[in-house]
Image 1: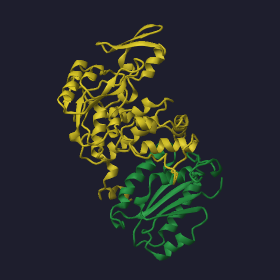
Image 2: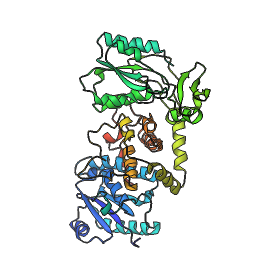
Image 3: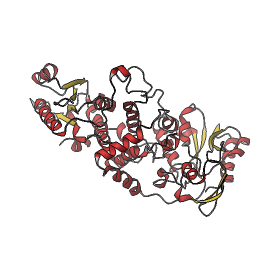
Image 4: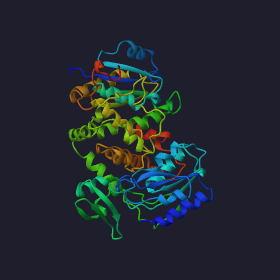
Length: 146
Length: 317
């Protein structure tokens, strides 16, 4: 088990309006954070979250636009209904709810994502490594990456 | 129990009058415990129609396996009727092409509970009028209380009566209590997280990936299931822990706002894996959060296929 928690960040490519923030996410993310860039949070299938969780992510963060600021009008709300229910549901079968965090960014926000990621990482460090549901076997036996 | 002769008469009538091309019902199976789904195309065949509390399939499953142009008559209980409504909403069959013969359902018997008491070699199972069941087996006669044999989903059934059948045969029954279903979910949610995960592992990891639950479910009609998809492979398709858990998680999640709690998945499972603790939780959430009950009509969209901006007050902290 690594000491720093492994985080998967699903990021809507429209939610970071500031070029500096977007540049930081694209090029300067710490090594323990894996970036999955999406065209909209509405494109996130709950299966993607499950893949991250089963693959051993200690935490999953979904960052998207505020409800009325979606580039595609309602993609983020449609997504939110499903993803919120999915995180509830994973909690029902034994994956701590605190490990899935949603972040809604205003277009005016600057420097929020760095702070939020740091706070999330601190929370995950306190929780310890995720053990439940992290059942994916390595690539040699098969699995999603085979 | 509905009058079986009345059921036959109605099925014969709609077939002989040409109202439908086919009636989906049940006929006697290989053992008295398993009446099997049957497809009657002429009035004469309807003589073989059987209906009793051991008819455990959800007949709405077969709706999606016939062309939309075919006129189908179907015996429906409460859960089947709601499944049909949900399928009609999803455009799987026009409502005009259906003739639903409604049966108020007193609950389906879990055959495993009979076998547990009598052994597997049965000669006959007869329902008696005083709510008991007479079982003739190799080791003698047994009289069993019907209420103790009901399948768990049926014991906490909320809508036993068909909601939109064209004709209802039999006396309407009192509606069930939603609190029963909620109690069950709440009891599981109150367990510590490690126990919940242990239970989930214990159940899901017995899976042999036969997909009987998928075939039994009326709402599982995708041309290609996510587990069969090769490229990209969404989840492991073997009996690995990740594969078995992934299948159980996502199969149930795909039924969110579509599951009518008929319990056909559980009854179909050869490994006797419990699954309704997953779908009940999702159904309960749909009731609490969106005030949505599956299949009560053919026009209300399920929560996941619609959006409103009202959600924003709930989501943004």
